[in-house]
Image (cartoon, rainbow, N blue to C red; front, side):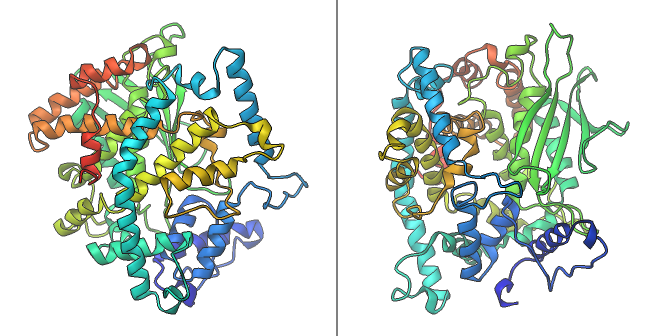
Length: 529
């Protein structure tokens, strides 16, 4: 069908599989043709991203986009039991309760309470760092959008002429950004998948962990019980002593029927002398592309980065030397410092020695062609301005809602949470204002259901530290294996070992010898002009 012309086979196979799964037991014997359909596009992340990135039909993209941004809102239908799925009342209640608690504890607002246990000293300090990066990122984002728009007007036909379309709509930008990236780098995301089969990626990542941290990772074949056949169990061993020091479960694939979206690391067993627990155990959970037919999981590069990211969290939990449970591993680590190890690990996805430790064709075993790797590195800064502005929007929106918003007044005709979203978008992403019906906040679970309330800025705050930490390896030379291992051991003995019992600024200074600087982050993102 014309609506899916040019869509990668992997996406069509995923949608066909989703359709087949939706039939339940009655359809278990029904054969579904991935090439001809029928397909079912769901709103879980791999399906949504594939739609926005590859489906040429504007009407299909628009429908999926609007469904995605109105989830869990007043626009959502009730469930089978007649219960509302609208999160708006819950959000106002959460905001009011958080403010009430903060004032009971002597703070002016929830943001002040949140920052009392974080590395950032004040709300103003968060805004200052965000504004510093925004000053560099916004001009770059505007240039990027101009280039994407020109690509759409030149290649999109009548739908994209200035007479018919004043500016690109939100469901256009990702699609044409991908087309522009393909034209610039002649490298399609789908062309990379065959080189990123999950088993090989795991082998390569475990090899990196061994190089840097002197730790060996082995799959446990003893039949440890898991909650799904997709899940596997691994043990970590210190190479010097040969002693087992940790374990983790890995749940890598998307399962929309019974698994929430996103990716996360969680604690299964924490290290604690008091509880007699010396071997910490972690859960590493992703929502990557599942195997299709007889093919292994063929990952997008973004999924590879996500796996490295969550493993970074896991390593801080598993390699801790702290023995008091409340400060062992990730426990007690200030929220704006906890992303340091995870984002640090992502940098290695662009290191040649690391990548060639796993990037080989799943059928032929041929390594990733050199020119493809070079283009992959060049792509790293593609769209960096728009991506930075988007993350800064989320962080500043979160901070504004928890420091300068009156939920009581909003329920009596004052500024609503969605008004705040639009106001902050005018500052951070003036080129892409939310639609009137945009209810992104209704699914912003990080700040309403997770631990990131008045803390979403932590991603960017930690990104500054993680880029600077990786800079230590760049300074000694990534090809200098002896020095890389030396710095890696130091990273293990500081950032990954000390847990939450030492102030994060002190931890960073023990590793780096000074306080963090945003210079490396701006350089890595091509935002230094």
